[in-house]
Image 1 (cartoon, rainbow, N blue to C red):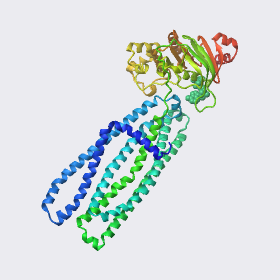
Image 2: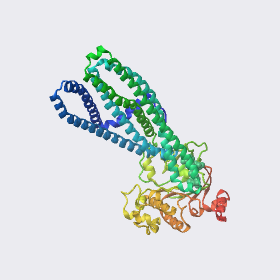
Image 3: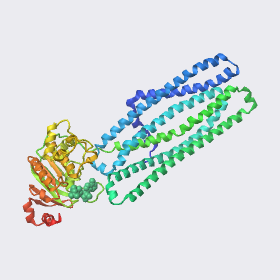
Image 4: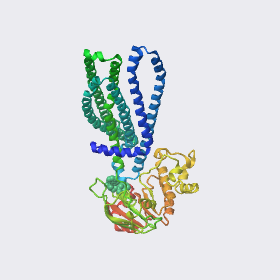
Length: 584
Ligand code: ATP
Ligand code: MG
């Protein structure tokens, strides 16, 4: 995160305020409540003089009696003002947090896949939770202090000046000194709190990595290594927090020492006999009490800038996320259902941050309804091709056409609607099997359709044994299922989607030979009248493809049907021989 310049603070503040605007009424009520609260307090102090000089010194019994009656009412009003301001401020704050959170959440679904590649899930979650919370907490606190304590300070000063301007002037002298300290402290605060936010992000990221990969950690005996990594981050976080605490403590003490000088000065001025003669006990007591009382709000006002800066730093981090460019969705054609021809013309693409292109000058034509198989070594670019078709990434040059339309001319939604995808990385949601199969289309499909898809993908086979059948919850990412079972659910999802183009990336890799053959049948049935792009390491599953494309290092090296490729005696033959001499 970058340092925040004053002019940037103004922009951030304006932008944050645009969120507050929608809850204007609550905000105004909160401010009124705060001012009311402080005015009551100041009024209370102003009455000390009357109480001492008239009530006690002149023994005015009636005054004391009425004061006694009034006090509970004053405190009742004060309590009401307190409730009003606290409630309204929180009402506004929680609303702002909720809408910011929603915006960030929505935005994270609109940024390109590449953004997610480059940002750890932990960091992003920290922004949604911690950073946004900070915006509310710090800004509310800053506002509360500024208005409530600010009004209180003003109120007390008015009372003091009214009673004795000479004594009160002393306080005016220390003002600038306090200001200088505050400036210095706030700068340090800003720096440290940014580092803390970063450190918290690291804590989340490292913990998450360990939790997700905990089996690998245990098996590799890497506990100590992970513990060391975490302990480093843990220590950094703690150190930064201590810096924050010590800065705060030192600044508060310094302010208090300066304020004590003021008190000393008052006593010395009062010791002048000429002055002392004109001074009543009530006036002196009130001014002195006011001065001592001023310490608390002044102390709080010294941290107001820090709170404000903390809020602004969190704001900057959240807005930076909201300013991330979204996926380019400038296509205007809304296709219903394509016939399914796919053409790649001289397509070249490199992943961000990589010098070597993952795909180089790819030319490939798939007529509608055909099945094409992509084979080749790991890392040769097979999955990358499918990633470009769905526009998960934008290719650097060349063009991809579906039904002879450049895919960039279609809206993202309608483009992606043309595909059903069973990807290499099975992703399931923490929900029931039925809802996972019907994910994203729960409203438009019937139970019978879900059951038919489950049947076709052989999900029904293992569902029999589950307590609630298709309505069994599967836990986070299908924790309670085997790899093959998970894969079958995603195949059922693809079947139900009934899209014109089907992408199967290692769709049967986690299945045993028996299930694989049965799924193969299901897929074959599904392939009728559909364009299918299938990626498989096991060549036995793709022998029947209309066209087999052999890839190597991001290039197409061979193309043809099974027999002709074997006859060619090239790369395909090598892979084939390797698999069928027991090395598969
Ligand atoms: P496999 O058979 O192992 O699935 P593949 O042929 O599908 O391999 P791709 O996933 O297309 O291979 O990867 C092609 C190249 O692009 C590889 O060198 C890989 O390291 C790189 N690559 C893949 N995904 C990313 C990514 N998100 N960011 C950067 N580079 C990537
Ligand atoms: Mg792959």
